[in-house]
Length: 123
Image (cartoon, rainbow, N blue to C red; front, side):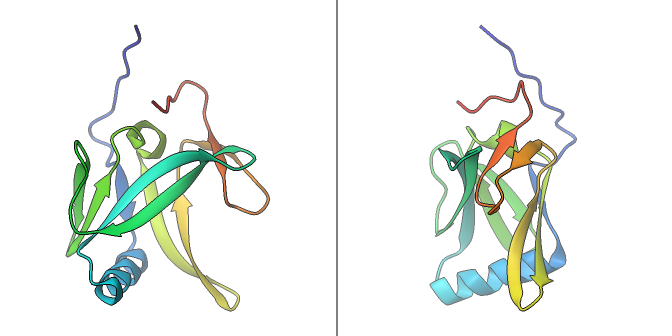
């Protein structure tokens, strides 16, 4: 049996104003009311982020409100994304969402997957 301790003063996820504006526009276009964030095992380094547009949370999701935007976080993913800042930036001609995740120790060259510091569990 293991016990996992969380610093409850650290938000699970924060959004910069450009990220919030981008996601609100995406939701309006999709006709949905919220974003759900989770991770899944994938890629060459272990995990990838999954963002889906939704109208309601799944069982046990954590709700995070950022102004007019509602984000639901998968509770199994929480240890791996706690403290993440989501930003929306211009890179050359491209616009991209960037996950500034303090738990990430390595990312693949294409940016599709990442690994997490030792001791953080995905259940």
